[in-house]
Length: 237
Image 1 (cartoon, rainbow, N blue to C red):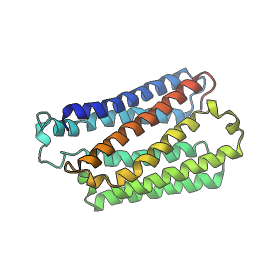
Image 2 (image 1 turned 90 degrees about the vertical axis):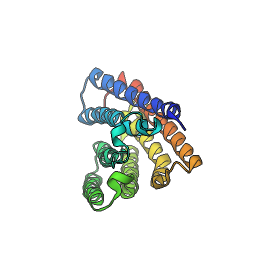
Image 3 (image 1 turned 90 degrees about the horizontal axis):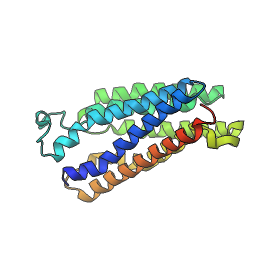
Image 4 (image 1 turned 180 degrees about the vertical axis):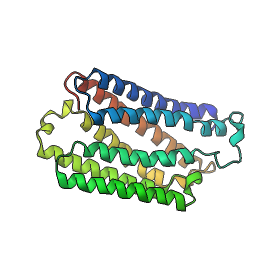
């Protein structure tokens, strides 16, 4: 696996992330009503693009045999886990709060609020008191964060069944976001939990994980983009 392998399997992800952020920005500014959840969603998409660009230094260094970013070789910054672990916590908090903003049942909103607070505090503590911060993706964050997203999406769908929004899902942006988010985490969480086995010696697992990450990301952001396009002329959410 060389540098071209890295480019081939990561550049499409970055392109789709950037396209999703651009289409989201256009969707937001072309909407008559500027809804706060949509604004925060667009900001989060741009944060994701920024994190991906910054975090690319690690694989670039590795696949170029440290011809680039030579200063990270042999240091705890050789892997970009230090960057992605906080980002994962942010991501797992953002999506439940995003779907919570479209839930009208007070009890469910309260439950999601305290679940997010509990997850945020415990995930931070886990990073502080474990050795995962620089070495691997925190398993606690991955597992509990994914469960939190599944719960929030489930409650969001129950809300849809109880409201009139399900009669017009084609033009309901949060529905597209929920589909993309749900399938991405459903596909990637099991593999992410085994990220500690992401070793050079295990070529088959490495290649499978890279391909799964590639197609899962493309699928998720493609669904986001479709949502921004389809919902733009009808209404804003």
